[in-house]
Length: 288
Image (cartoon, rainbow, N blue to C red; front, side):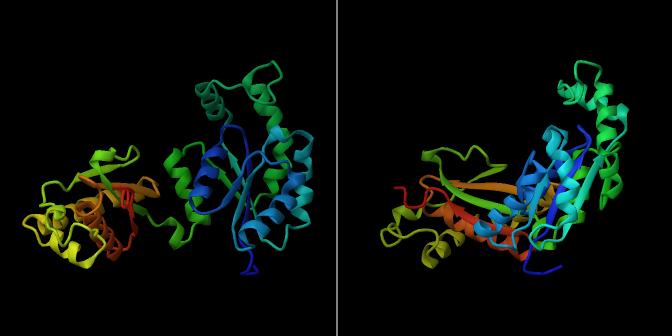
């Protein structure tokens, strides 16, 4: 493979076999994902991605029978190659019994059902996809896989050490502006003395060394960090086992300027030392 060009992954397969789950995982792995793409547009989409993101950007496209007559052009597009990229065709499959059960649970008709039974639509789809399945580079039978197991298979096949590592965002905030609604965990730093009341520290922020030293040197601060970081590290390991790629930890104080900022920086630093991709984000810094 030309190392200046990213991967091109084409995801197809039976309705209900997990195409959307695979696409979501590829997106989490850093792929530029396009869903329900007519195969004839595949070269054009890759060209546009090359121009806007660079040829090293990995691309994934999802193609299914909704593409109609365009679907027949997929084999031709793949056979001729696309913009110098090595292409992997992934086919997701499952037994008819499982596919029927999944579609019924989702309460969606099959695109080829044509007013008949759901099973009739699946059988028509198998006929349309038969040759494509035989040519696939990777066939994944999702019959006995749950969502987490399928994402693990995709990550194993297309992830790198960098893209499969957990990403932790440690977000400082001010309680007076509201708790971040998308936080997985929230900790309150208002048990520590507020540097706001120290005249020489008031205009500074938790990113300044003097403020950080003051906050981390207060009674209880070191004990909190020493206890909280291992707790988060244990949760992070569980997230990785469950196939989760992102974790958001919110650290709050009154205004989001001093204590929460200093603590967020320290927690992110320690998590990074343990091998996680961690960064501190200061939501309310400069807002006062």
